[in-house]
Image 1 (cartoon, rainbow over the protein chains, first blue to last red):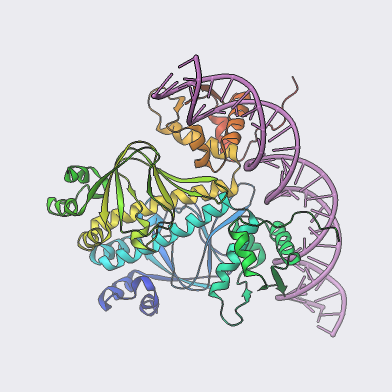
Image 2: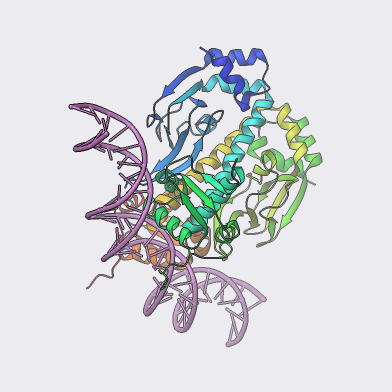
Length: 236
Length: 236
DNA sequence: CGAATCCTTGAGTTCCCTCAAGAGAAGTGG
DNA sequence: CCACTTCTCTTGAGGGAACTCAAGGATTCG
């Protein structure tokens, strides 16, 4: 098992000394998941938590009618299911591999012991949880106070900032159906709103995954609720 | 200043030894707020965090149009604004006193120092943040996957469990306008839905703040999306 | 008692969801 | 390479939930 190498690469354990890393590695187990496989389910008893080393994972809630709301999309290096370790014992949401994944599992006790000995790890974990709270705060704001066009505009702009290469181009790294679920809507609605944005000259679609930002000013106004997309088809 | 006495009463610091409590007390300052006063605003730079010792506080987001979404209602003993200490430096939401409040302010550094020395405090803080994440997860689920009647039913049932005295009686400890904001809706909608619940024999209103649960089974079904309130006025 | 706040009710509108069908892209196997 | 399935995305028609605006009761407080 290559666990020590993986553990070293995790930001949470970045500055940990060799001894502790080896201790963690001793208790850790390495798991792999195929696209679509369930990592854990909502309500399941947690015996530890996970650290993603390869691939991407979605954490989500599902309604009785089958509508899905994605809470997070996690990438390599990020911890997963940690909430159940510190409070409540049960996973508050489900997690599923979005593609081929490699994941380390750390039993609860091994990690709890480390935290008591290493305040630096505790502080980093506090930072991780704080960032998640911040993200959730934004998601709640989106769902409660913004309409779908505003959420989409905010999403495009945030992706826009991280963009490499052509600065006006956003490449979606998830399907539109998944993006809809992340924004708290459904694919049909997302599709219609993208079409309206195109009609208003805010963006341009390039292939299935490409979106070119034509008017970031206009998107900004949408995101802040200062502007609306015209709902009626215009009479030309 | 009575800070040591207050600090001892805070669950977060319950088992702390005298020395550390006095150290905290030395750096802490005691503040009071009247109903409606702002404790901090969204986006403001955080120089520390707060612990509520008396009264209640709401943490909330506001949309450009003025709609408010309450994220938390906090009571005595609960920490406030802690997210900004561990990540991001700025408060992700605003906080306002709902009634006369007494609050301790702890500068960031004093607390960071304590956490490094006392793993038990770090663990408790991790538990606090985890519980908040859990609450937010539920709120996101409510906003995205449930309709207002379902949210209200879930709220009533959760209050129902904590109820003392008459087990079928829920006494609202906040105004209906605030409850609406907590559920992610507006007073008019809440009012209408309460009226519909009465008409269907699920509850009974007693005065402004009293709600008698008549059919907790029915509320349960509503909360789980297995039942709907009839939308049309029935023809009698 | 009057002022202010809180709550309710009505009418109208908007957003977005549901259901349904079809177009486009991608992967599989003969 | 093409027919096949399969998945993803788009578009249309219709409806329902919840919001806005507006006004009228109810309750509290000075």
